[in-house]
Image (cartoon, rainbow over all chains, first blue to last red; front, top):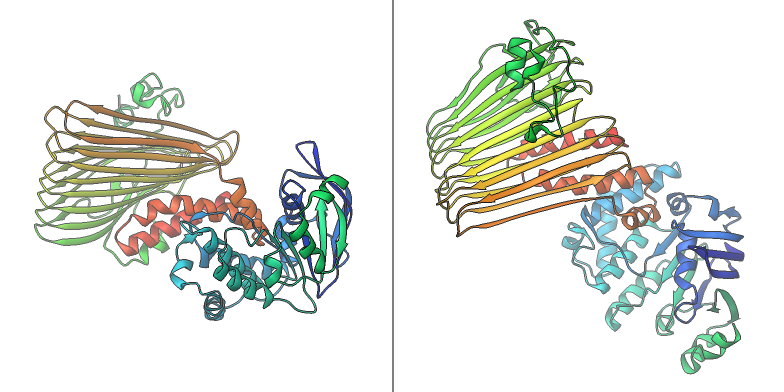
Length: 248
Length: 347
């Protein structure tokens, strides 16, 4: 599924990711944990294709296809979905319009037929119900005036609607209270399947109580410095990142 | 020094020049060396599908002449919905027209004024007057669809009785030079004026929306919101002047102009002016020029929306605020469709 090999990324000439390799097979959930400044957000933005993140060496591919050669919207159409740490507010564009535009664009890029308006609304209602979101929220400007937790729900709602093949969750637990964390996690877990992969990027272990990873990787100073099973997350929670920060 | 006088006398020296402060960004004398000959009379013009779909009574002016009726007069307490089409049909010619709208006491009018270039390279001028009796209510939507190599200048003058309401939304697509002036003599006395505008400019098009509102009496309200986008080498001009004369206390006047530059070579010139000679007033103006939010574009692209679609979506949302203020629903839908059509032309 997702293969990252010896990836080097610089921002403004400053190296941030420094030889990162990672493989996430289909059907698995991998967590990437690390201290602030380790390069977690840089990794997620690089995979999504944000401008200003210069890949100076290495590769990243999804099912053998070179992701780095694709535009952000092409990557999304291939099934890559990044749940933003800080989702944007877009005044004047209702969430329903935004999601429908995105869904249609992805269908078009893949040569699939458009979802009809009634079918789209039916699916949105179901997804909103699952996330306990009011449909009125979807008729207002996207994320405008939303709390941090509401914005994260809106990310997951988009994820449920777009049905991506590979999910990247960037600090999805930040800004969530326990109830919201549970609801959001249920939304994410609903998408777990044998043909999907997931990369859960987080500073804290608590999200992993709800979204159980198959593998845990420690990211420090721009590279993976340790990998293990779910028990590694618990160890990090107990002992902190100090020893890895020093080792890097 | 008016375009009308220059056309009548075929004398380019009578055209407004950049040296006239009010025309500094739309000087015509520097542009036009020879005033073109008078436009010929035209028997009929092609229908406009979108406007015809409204089914409203329609007055057609072609090359400066009314084909049938020239005047709109709504009697007291009456109601009317009209379309006026001002069509320039012959290239390389010039014309001027005068047209009058009167709205009786307590009467209501919704009016769409559509300026259409069906040929290129013309010089068009219009003087349009509005006379509203007390309590009259007018909502006017103006569509400026000139040819890209045309020069057009229209001047509207509005006089208002006590308690009247005049709401206007001007949607401009630009031309070689496109000037749209609105002059309002605001008597206060509970009169409510809204002067909005939006422009979508590409290529080398230019558009100039100029407004002058003179508050002469107490307790008048004026709100203005103009938003625009300029791509390529286009130039958008907004000049808004609000004058609050001595004694016009209780005036509430607010003016805003916000523009997006979609290219490095596009240009926005804005001059908001408040001249206040009364004491007890609430006046404010705001003016911003910026670019589309790159972070928002990336966010949309990360969801699979291609860059040109994302830009159109964000630009439409930016301009949509102006259209949303149109109260009459069919007119608002026309305005919306018109804007989307122009935005697709940008992408």
